[in-house]
Length: 109
Length: 114
Image (tube, rainbow over all chains, first blue to last red; front, top):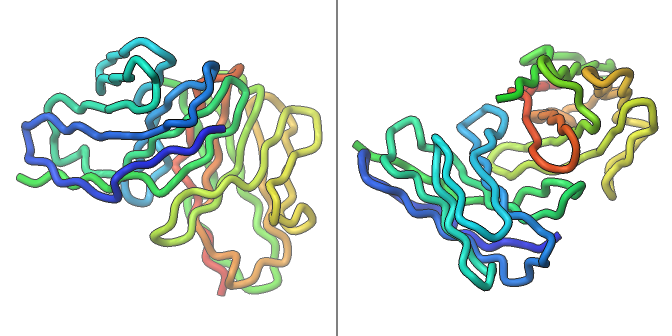
């Protein structure tokens, strides 16, 4: 499975959009981009995933570049409860979720 | 979304004893379950993958005789930490998957070995 690169930390103001980047330049054609987040001392929570097209659900939007070498997770209106470590993971179907260091997002009032 | 539970949520045990952690998928049947370990200020590390009715597959460096995994049904997997020592103290998290895609995580079990 392809590796990903994320910034170690980001600050975001409450009510603003949070844009979390992820680079995955070695992604293969059949690999998906997954996003999970982990609030302190809890299990990871699934956010969204996509293959080629942009995706949106009630939690976030996922924008994948045309060459699929990078993506951005967008939290449209960050709240204090969105403070967490966000993980961008690339894996193929039936592959294993392997977690990197992720991005620590802190939402401030 | 799909719900995965773990029991207990925390456990304290003496060195040398064994501890069993249960992982259940509450509203779906999981074809595959995974066990992760997370030390303080670190990311999750995959320990093993298990499919119902078959032996677990362990990641490199994980001792299969120390971390016994039983996947008895499509809704239950157990992890037993045998002869636990203080260095086994960690946050153990399971996850369950239906098919090849979405994977749902339990709330984790905090193990402290004295």
